[in-house]
Image (cartoon, rainbow, N blue to C red; front, side, top):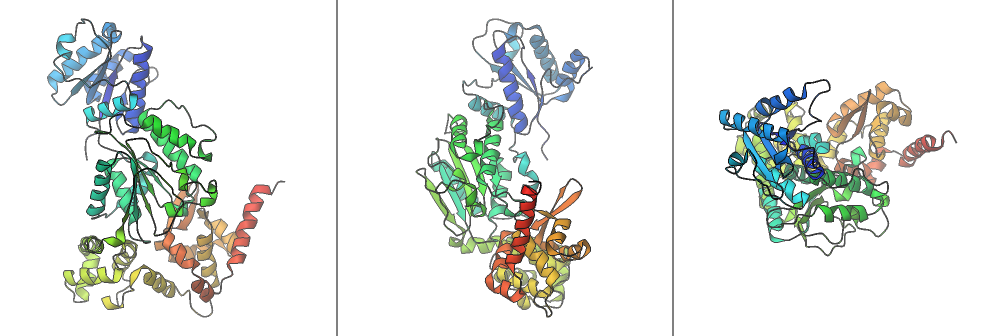
Length: 517
């Protein structure tokens, strides 16, 4: 793991322009993942400020960024700080001193030392200036903080997809702006791919996640708008109250943040699962998520969706990358994923007990998976848990739909008499659009919490658990399983009246909204 970047920002408080630039850089660099020391904010209350400044330069920081102007080069403490940085660099060659010269400078005591150092180029545009500082300190990209745990989960065990990532890069290099859309079937690994892209690049990102209730256009506009404002230090102290009502606010923010030098800089926004957006949450006839029809130069969207049409009319460059058009690469990536899993002890034991070679196991499981990564994420852990101990590889389910049907039967959902408690709880999870507590599920199902928990334990591989204060919230992990539950033949076979379940949910919502009226 790379050592953290810790930057001391030296500036004068006697010039408002220097002060504003220093603090805008401090805020934006922290958003990019750096640790920043800047007075007076970094000095603890009650501490001796002179001692804290000396320690900040000599002990605590990896970089020293000096904002040099006619005002700062005449400031006593800026000159003292430069002298301290010079002393530190003489003892520690890994310590980097970065002069940022703003305007014309006259003679000053430290000029002989500063003029020997490579300067950070000054830019009138703040976004461009920030990128110069980021490049100078060698900041590695950080995923947006709000999505880090989600990205870590999605990229665990990620392999392959080099052909998709290369296509994205070609598009970014060959266009001045535009939309690049990755299209694929449920479980094809679209979310993992986009999460890996965000992890590698640290770009602005938004993930639509139906199981967490993140499906509305206003959520997207506010999330992306906030990230862009923080990342590029735009002059918006807060989002306007109506920011998410349409696309005008987002379009304006993108114009403000658009890179001025498209040859070296670009603003990339990654958006996952367009198909999970609740189109009822936005103005009829508008683009999905209020995405702009035109984009400023240097602004790109990299997005994913299923094989279904969505309202998106744009004049910007637009390219669709269909995963189904690359069967050889999909098979190669699936086999790499399986081969990595085959190195785990319990998977290897299963292979040996069934008298298979690793190569044979990898090839056959890839065929049965239909190169679907969601299938593999379920089946491989179940092989490790011994679920398929008595089955040959030819008896494993085929494809994601086949896996769901197999699991449905193994859970006794088609038994006679019907396991109505199980059916009600699972369908409640499918119908409720927000994560729900065990207590709420029990109320809707008309069952006690212990019975509900037993069902949740059985269906654990399909559930996402979130902690909220003292409660645990449950939701379905993947949209494809929700779709399986909504299939009419499955509903009929289960003998469940979805209207009753939806009526209970609607009644609860009505009570929450109007119960005191």
